[in-house]
Each structure stands twice: as structure tokens, then as C-alpha cells.
Length: 316
Image 1 (spheres, rainbow, N blue to C red):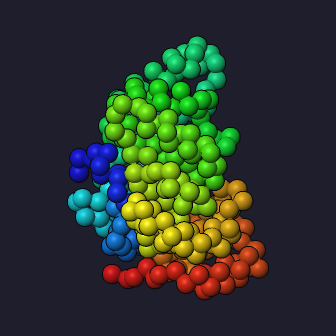
Image 2: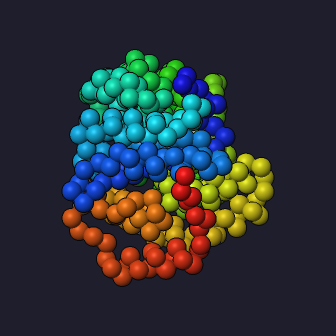
């Protein structure tokens, strides 16, 4: 599939987790099954894989490619498949070529934080270097802005400069944190760049507010466990049905409250537990995770899911 900005716009890209069996092996059939179930939901336009830092590092390069291949089997020709390759550098060139061969349409990547004296003596020189890197990759690029300490840009000018110069950059993952002011600043700065780009909010708690500002689509981990609701929230916001969007936001808030305020490894554990309860994962276990969630917290998750009564993710 030849991907464009339009391919990333108008719906939800669901960021999925990889199913593992009790021995820690990747479950290929389960990958295809969950992708098929998710992409049959109205408003879901594609899947993003290998997006969780701990999970990605726990798998071999070949396993990450197998996740792409198995996911691709579930998708229609007009549905998008993107894969995260980690930090943007010359080291990912071969990885991106392999991702393309496995069936990915685009990659997600993020620049490292700039340190003076590396890759140019000024940030402008480094941005020029990064733009050249993205233009040299075998697939189009979605740049992740990052959150908190992982945010790579020093200023709005840095972001817009990369957006302007990187001609293979199709869009930006706008970040998962709930800083609505930062989102607004980033959004309007990027929209000032004189070329089309897909700006994709990925927050959980601030998604309603982000979409009120604007968003071309959604790149969402929350949509993995609440796909109907996130798609409906995007559709209501896009069509100015603000009261309906607010109601969906309010319904999701108890679950979002339990997802927020944790380190990235604990967030993954919580998402795995919710996905297991919702029937997407046969087990909440994952390779490299040895400490389970607190039983009391797991019970609270289950009670919350019962209370908010999310729409079932149907079997195919």
C-alpha cells in the first residue's frame, strides 16, 4: 500500500500489545486474531505495532518482524500498518528495510535528545541531519514528540523545522501525557508548516480536550482495550457533537484514572491485564515481566470494567 497523509487521517490507529504464551513465546495466530477483531470495528483505520518500549526490547529483531507479518495478514489492503523502530539514527536503516519487506506501511521513530557537540554544533544543524535521515529511510515516517523527560525538542521552532525539512515525514505522534497547553502549542505550530501532515493525539486522559483543539486522526493505546469508545469519541469530536464526545470521555474516565500515574512498565502490565479481561489476550503475562500487579489493584480494574460496561470486542 502506498501510504499518504490521508491514509493516517480520519480514524483511529490502534497501538497493540504482543501476545505471549506461558513459555514467553510470541503467539503468531493470536496476533492475527486480535488485529482482525480490532480492524473490523467502524472507525479503526489500522494498527500500530512494536510501540511499547519494554516489549520491543524484550523481543528479537526477527520476532518484531513476525509481529508485522502476522498483523498484516489481518488487514485489508486499504488499512494501515505502522511499526515503531525506536530511536532515529543510521542504525535503523536496515530495520526499516526489513519492516517494509514484512508488510509495514510506515514507521514510528523519535530523535534522541540533542547534546551540543554531537551531530552538529547547533540544533538547526542537527535538525538538518535528522531530516536527511528521514528522507533516506525506506518507509514514510511518523515522528513521536515524546513526553516529559523523553521529549526531544527544545522549542516549537525545532519541531516545525524538522516538519518543514523532512519530506518523508507524514505526521507526528503528539504524545501520551495530559499537558493540554503543550498539545495546543505543538498542534498550532505544526499546522503553521506549509505542507500537509497528520497530527495524531495519543493521550488517554486529555484525548477529548486534544480533539477539541484538533486532530487528523488518533494513535491510541487506549483504543486497544476500548476501540469502539475511542473511535466514537473521535467521530463525535470531528463532527462537532461535543456533548456526545464529553459523555464518552466521562464514561472512560474511571479506567483512564487507573491507567495514569505509573511508570511505562507498570502501564504495560495494566494494559495487559485489561486486554486479558476483555478477551484480547489469553494471558496477561509477558516475556520479562516477573512481578504481577497487586491483586487488590487487579480487582479494582475488573470492577471498573464491569461498571463502565465497554462495548464487547467481537470475535470474527
